[in-house]
Image: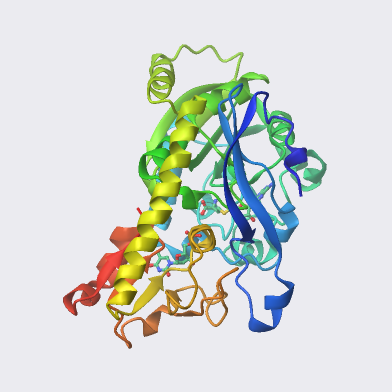
Length: 401
Ligand code: SAH
Ligand code: TMP
């Protein structure tokens, strides 16, 4: 349970905030399993030494990533488009015309790697969650149902020392043992190889007080400073950082070996900005704590006022992030009647911890809810477009932000 696998926690680690007793964020469950539900204490600390915000404690990866992982990248059309653009960008900027070898970590249902099918690029995905890995294979993607570690490279022999790029998206923050991750990458990459990954950005989380980015799977919330300090402990350096709008504000990092000569004015200035905005120092984390407490108070006040007027509230999109909001703020079915979602694996089940029923989004407009709590606030544009009629009928979207 303890974050003991992570040997890069850094020194001078200070506790920041506890969100209390928390279930598995993606642990949507049936009624019969309520009594055996697993809980742990969700709290974060900040290492001043490596500027890293991190969970103090988390469930073992296999409890989260197994044959029943209910998140599918392809459930968002916007994300499908994003991964198509991510692939085109990388092809243009880093790949040769022929004979490339690439790897993706956390390749999920193959949405990203599909963009390399029928090309001169040989690809391989590492995906420990069997259901999504199987789906990727069905879609013609080369996926191995394994965690990304050195001992799992048996099926990747031809990639050892020959890989041009190791890609990732929303996965490096899921890996407790960052040393093992970097050593595995080191074994695979060729001399000019790159690691390119994008993750929810600490600066965006602070700015929005989107504390719901913090849940069991997100062991770290990275900043450019933290990434720069972590990779500098090894034979690697950060050579670019590119902001992304995905997931409410992410950062794409480009990492190369130190021997690749590079002087990056842009990174230097981005690091200075993070210093100025207190993203790299303890003060930023302490401010965040205050903002979280305030956000909880404000949200509960808003919801109680709505309920007092006799209005009905539902939730929209049973996201992993919603688990943190609902459990931290103690919001159950007495306040939010149900949550509508598109994922077949979630429909008919109950939300982790608070046990709000999850219903098929097709029934969203069948009953009128005065207010809908948009838990997938990061997909706001896509969802509001899809549910235009709701606003016309007088419904209102709300979020905790
Ligand atoms: N990259 C996709 C999926 C993100 S969800 C996207 O951005 O939409 C994170 C994925 O990483 C899950 O499918 C999970 O099973 C996988 N994962 C978790 N730990 C991993 C590890 N150590 N190695 C490889 N994949 C991992
Ligand atoms: P996540 O925030 O954990 O990535 O999960 C996104 C969830 O949002 C997933 O359960 C699917 C759901 N969803 C909808 O229900 N409707 C939508 O239009 C979109 C984009 C997502």
